[in-house]
Image 1: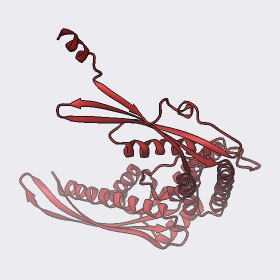
Image 2: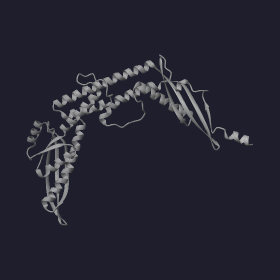
Image 3: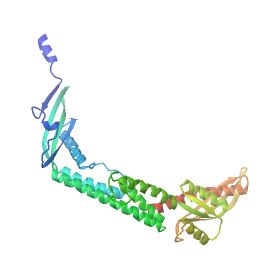
Image 4: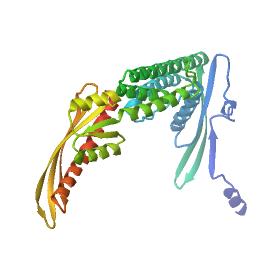
Amino acid sequence: MLFIAGCAAEAPAVAKTSSAPRPPAWTLRAPQDGETLCFAGAREGATSLEEGTDAATQVARAHAAEFIGVDVSSEHRDVMSTDVGADQVQDTVRSRAAALIRHARMADVYYEKYSRKAGATTVDRFDVWVLIRLSRADLEAERVRQQDELKAAASGAVSRLREAETLENRGDALAAVMRYREVVAQARALPRQLDVADAQLRTCGQLLQIAQDELTRAQAKVRRAVVVGPEWIAGAVVQALSAKGFTAVTQPAGSERAALDSARAQGVPWVIVVIGNTAPGGHIFSQMAATASLDVRALEARSGAVAAAQVKQGKGFGRTTEAAQQAAANQAAVAAGTELAEALMAKENSGL
């Protein structure tokens, strides 16, 4: 009895079975020959043979993608509108590489099954290895095709940079900003060390840095304005614009035509005209009340066209009627200036 009990205690807790007497050599090193390339993938602890085979196949395909030089992924990433062009290039490359890899021929599968008793049931786990084969000629052709497309994308980005510089030199700074943004988005999607084959630029990394610097400088140029209006209200509008990254200077109330001429001469893209009035209110406890109404318009300096407009009302309180009126005007001016700045930035983003 003791002998039998001792033998039972030595019985394995986990039973192992495998699809072959010993693991194939390719599980350690994928074989290669002149016509095909082989890639191996593995999955440990799968709950079924099917799950393990699918997962190991995906790993093998990922190794093939690494060889080609792309990240073949099924994940979706939301992007800014300025990145759409760059993402389309990447998606085209990924989708074509993925289609090529999906047609890889499965050459072999090896698995090890581990079964463990759990009460009245048996729990199985699978370690699976998969070997896939791909045509060496097809893979090499895809690598060459991708390199050609990357070089073409780099050349296009350089052309966009030159377009932006030309637009800026012509005085169309708003359109130039949009072009610089496109260059930044395109260059970010390219390998930093890729040769751009340009007389002045060597690599995509240098292209990206220059485009970013030019964008920062040009954006500061387009976010300038001349504010025309009475002093008691223009200052608050300027403060609101400054909080949004604009540089604005005030000009005493006068004709819009004179302000537009001045802005054009200085290369300032916007003229903001502020018209307002206030009205006293009654007593609120120990303070005076007042209301203010503002009409604020942003004019495109080159054409004089209205690019954005805001009408705002405000309420204010103070110890005196004048203080209450100023408080009401400041409240309306901050709201108008903030929304006007956002409207102008939207124009800027659209490349107007």
